[in-house]
Image 1 (cartoon, helix red, strand yellow):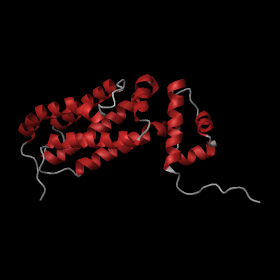
Image 2 (image 1 turned 180 degrees about the horizontal axis):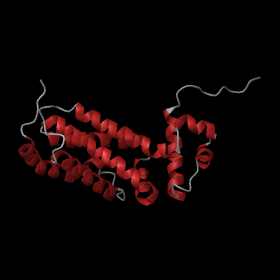
Image 3 (image 1 turned 30 degrees about the vertical axis):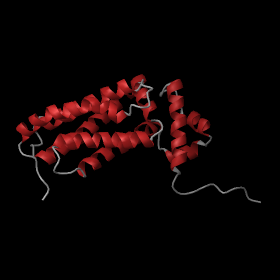
Length: 211
């Protein structure tokens, strides 16, 4: 009699998430560099071959969700109300993306703890956050009509990114469930965007409106 058939086709999301959860536990316990794919597979109860059905590399466990978060932010900005002030649209998209992704990603908090405790990930982390800021900069160029070479969009993108990252790092130790990440960030993101909006308007002119 044949044994149970192994599932084929697209990997189950739940299995992918379980592997990520076990991987982050090992990363935080042993360090990213010292954790092998074999040890992740063993802790997850899968073979190395099965591991590669879900992830192409150890690094993908770290960055896949972050890349998806950047894509989500870009989509939300593209779908934002053209009648909103540009930085109100930025603020709402940033908070929406963070709220959605922290709610669906069980290892979001561990991911940022790992970033700050793993020097070998710093360069990649910086590159990903630069890409995150670049999405905001590109949106401001399109929304305001600012020339691509103008300093304002990248400065604003960098300012928003720096604030969000600083607030994330200060949020990590919190244990009060009444304070969501979005609320925590918006305490300072709202006044930052309100302060920068007049500068954006004065420097880039009247925002473009949808036809």
